[in-house]
Amino acid sequence: MFTVKNDFRLSDSRDTLVVGMFEKTTAFEGLLGEVNAALGEVLADLIKEGDVSAKKGTISNVHTLGKLDTKRIVFVGLGKEGDYSFETARSVFGKLCKAANKAKYTTIDIVLDSFVTEKVDSLDVAHALGEAAPLATYKFADYKQKSNEPEKLLSTVNVFASTEAEEVEAGLTVGFAYGTGTNSARTLVNTPSNMLTATDMANYAVELAGRLELEYEVLEKEEMEKLGMGALLAVNKGSVEPPKMIVLKYQGKDEWTDVIGLVGKGITYDSGGYSIKPKDGLVGMKSDMGGAAAVLGAMEIIGTLKPEQNVVAVIPATDNMISGEAFKPDDVITSMSGKTIEILNTDAEGRLALADAVTYAKHHGANYLVDVATLTGGVIIALGNKITGAMTNDEALFEKVLEASNEVGEMIWRLPITDYVKERVRKSDVADMNNSPGRDGHAIFAGAFIGEFVDQTPWVHLDIAGTATTSSAYDLGPAGATGVMARTLAVLVERFGEEA
Ligand code: BES
Ligand code: MN
Ligand code: ZN
Image (cartoon, rainbow, N blue to C red; front, side):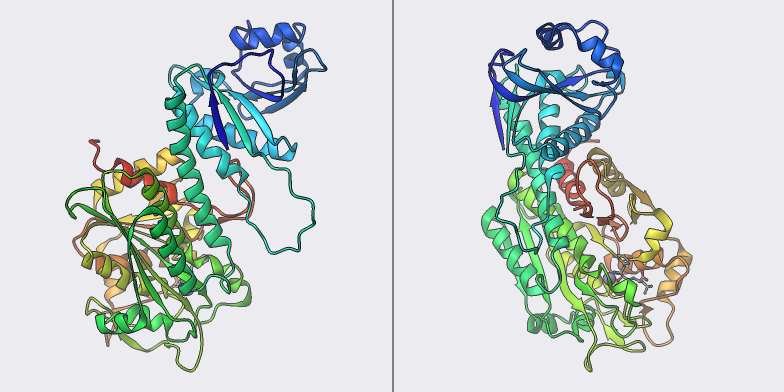
């Protein structure tokens, strides 16, 4: 997609030139001065008339009417220079790539220096562009019968920079890894559940492992039975699809110590089971493996960038279905940890699958745990569709996750686990705990339930039920799956060993 070049000349022949522009530029200096002169000193007028704007995020296409060998110039508004940041660069590049696709510009030439400031250097700008381009132009390959005409999409971005090409290339490569790993997560979530069973997800993970030289393990039902994974097996009982416990390992240190465990809910379809969802609640439940997708997307980024950190990814994969064999409310099941669970609601299945997954991640040496799950409708009521709910038993680990999420622009907000919450989870006449203490505050009961299996290990829980999908397009993506938390997890791993 990208080619880095050093020899920029305005006089060269090209279709589309992209130039960044800050607000309150009174005298046009440098490139803008050259462009202004070539266009016959009209830039100030164009701005005054509103045909060109430097307001943050505005994209102005100006035809040069033969005054230059450049057909058109796209001015990208960057806002006030004082407010400009890495995030601004990433979001305006997202807007730019979307606008380029809409206008069917297949090739664009970007002058990188026009986006560089004292605060945001060329490495940052290249990273922002490398990440934004794949994210903003992502499109799920749907199943519509296609017309024969291929779509004209942005495919070539020539990046002109005055700094060293290697540095710019490094920034683009890192950003691109973040963008494409997130897009893989999106595709997994967007894929219907009849085309993405637990077996399909395991095959995908094994293929990924082969491509990135990761170690892997896929547990079959018989092995789960031997290991006593009664919680995951209970969820799978009503299904004709076999369950899979998927493990990927990335070793970035000599010794297998200091291991971060990433655990992702992989319910390929959630019917609710006998506590069946109402018909409107069923629509969209193919996305109930959004946590698994985030973990797989993060492993793709990690496997590409190869940071010095150990990571084990664990994904409990199954659908939650109904049959004569399905588990039922009133059943009591025994988890891998030995804790028994009274089932009060078969639709509270995610926490069951995750209970065994967390236990298994510890079995594989995880010293820290982060679980990601489309766990509760309650978190959507509490925090809406843009903010992921977080819970923790460890302040320091939570701070690290929060910093990572801030860096990539994925908001998280913490919810509490108090003694009262634990009491509600542990209340049962017949078992050690129950899987559904009630509708009131059920997001925190669900998170606290997982915490019971984590025990003393530092842990952060991320409930992405509201954020895994979106009903409307945004700067860095279309409507549908967002791939949320893939980048946060990857940044967490990359930065983990660094001093605060
Ligand atoms: N997968 C759902 C949560 C969900 C809801 C995700 C909406 C995305 C959108 C989860 O398994 C579930 O069914 N949770 C129940 C919990 C209840 C039974 C305590 C819920 O949210 O109603
Ligand atoms: Mn459910
Ligand atoms: Zn679910």
